[in-house]
Image (cartoon, rainbow, N blue to C red; front, top):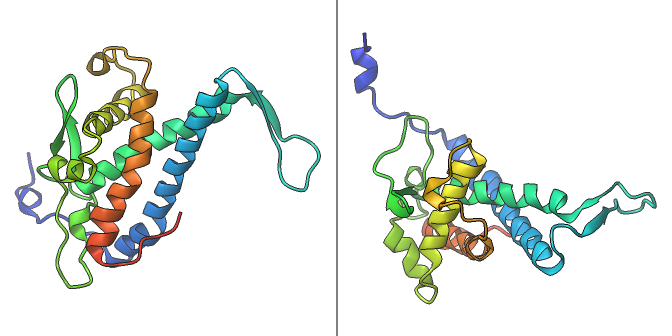
Length: 204
């Protein structure tokens, strides 16, 4: 039997410590991961995933690792994909349908933390970002929303669990969508989160 009290409990609000940690530690770290993913993608473009790479630690002569470039770059790119999905969902955006399109999140699950839990320097609660509001920052790049939707589904399907990949139609050449997403998500977060808060943009 469903506990009637629990059904009507108000959504749990994150603590101020949690919000502060996300603002200054978690999200800047995620932005750094996306920058590293963009660099890994560029390495693959320049050299191919079958090139050999030697990883060395500063002040040592012995290589720490010698492997195929793809063995080094693919995990970094995969993490960048997951991080982009994380930030889009944090701002209020998810996907629907096949092929996937962007849609606004209508409600959070209890315990989720979103941009709307934060308060600006003027005391105003931030609002969730709509797909149109996000895309308006990149009007010169009309393919940006499609790239975001594709990357969310890469995270949802190819990385999170095994599926038949029908939403992406088995597409294997996704470099352009990845490049677009990695280059635009940091600016989106800067404008719709840090600028909206009225605080300094973190350096990453």
